[in-house]
Image: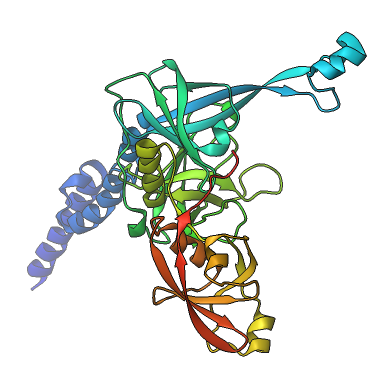
Length: 377
């Protein structure tokens, strides 16, 4: 029995000695820690794994975004106008002082043969427009047409085989989607910023006549106007147009014109030189809540008619100031912006049936839609 315990103790001592040597000099031989080793190795592999990146989207969209440089002569305030009358009485002192001003914006190539989409305010009143391409070329551009109602304009340059951006439907965009804003902020050079879509169908901002903005927190600064807002595939979902800011810099609230609206306006400008919209000659406001309660309207919706153009379509149809348009062709009108959008989408020359509330009663008016006059640029 004593020999057995002696043999056992010697075996244990030898085994422990072997384990100590293996642990110190060949830890990779430790079969009992393989599971632990696997667990420890995985984080190291994860560190080297590909990270989330939008490089592919940026690479697709960046070559399609251009810098737009405009210049024009502006008379310095306080100087006399350049007329024969003033020169006759005041001599050479009447010569106006002219200053050359420059403006910077962005644009997006929408066709390989040189059509470029940008904001109307970027090229407004410019007498010279130059476009700097991503490949380093600078070309003269001319205005095909513009639409102040949506703040969009189309330019044309003499070039072929250009990289053109792909359009995605802005109706498929959702709040929370990741977006990239591409442009030339402050003239520092082409820049890509990232954010998400914060809100959709923003209106009543007082920026444009027709508003349906995509709101984003991707940084948009002066010089970004007319640039691209793209999704994670690099497809266009909006044209960057405005920011909300007290300082002039990005505050995390930017607005882009949705691609569906931009595409429709662009095609009409290219085909007709202008956008053709319906018009009935009324000044409309949202229906105040106080009037809704006072007049006991059946539904809290409608567009309040604040003014009617004399001899205009609405006037000829018997519409009066103070009326409330509740429906057009059977579709409910929610507010003033809704009425403008519905009428604008109707081709000039067609008739509409408007359900009108007046003095506690409803009546139907048959209105002949005319073409909306162009705004002054």
